[in-house]
Image 1 (cartoon, one colour):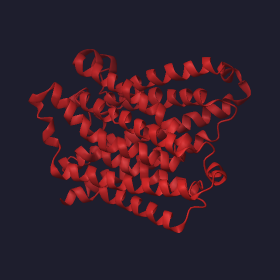
Image 2: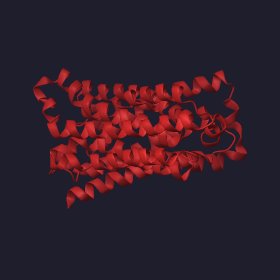
Image 3: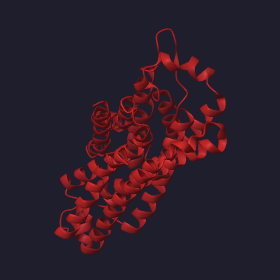
Length: 344
């Protein structure tokens, strides 16, 4: 029963993340770089800080925790957060060129597979005595493979969509639709986004041990990763503000109330996925396979729900019934990838 509860919590977090782009559509009179960094303040600083505070027992502090942590692990966690930040940037661009459904499918699918594998592999390179590779069991590898098969099927549906619609129909569904450019960006986004889970692997011991509820133990590391990602995004967005002369966005007082509200909502929805991941893993301790696969499961469910939103937002409007059937098959395979490894 606890395993079901854990998976449901992760699923709720995935649904929230997949919905985070919806509030962004309500932002007015700001350029991409302006709203991206403002929502990032909430997604990568404010909410992760509040989440990390839940892991701090009475009489302790986050500053004390980070000050006493292994400095190598701490900085590696931040470093992989910086690298993940590149994925965060290109992730937003992938949805710009492919839409919410297809962009998230390809980017998060790549992230799911590489993020699950890269964590134990890199941890083993630096700390072979931890035997991190033992976590990559046959069941875990099969879970990753099934996830990638589901992503590949959805990718095929995306290719069918790109080839069957006219340029006018593509633009009607996704304003800046560009399949070749979007595909390249989405693959890069997925590769770099996988660094998030690597950062969590390096920072998994940065907590107060038995003094911290198991459900909250990864939240301090999550803050460190998102802090690194914020740095990357801030540098790029401020550069774009300078390049495009969009500093004036921040002076538009008449839209600040509206935009701040929807940026905060988008940021909160985005962070919910990793808050849910931490809470969900606390219920998966009976299954080492699902604990290791939790990140992959989260990404697979993100893809599933993003395609639901893609359908709601009519991004697949005009596609043939054959294309929709292929899309649905891919979604069902992704859902199955969350459960099949438990029975291997």
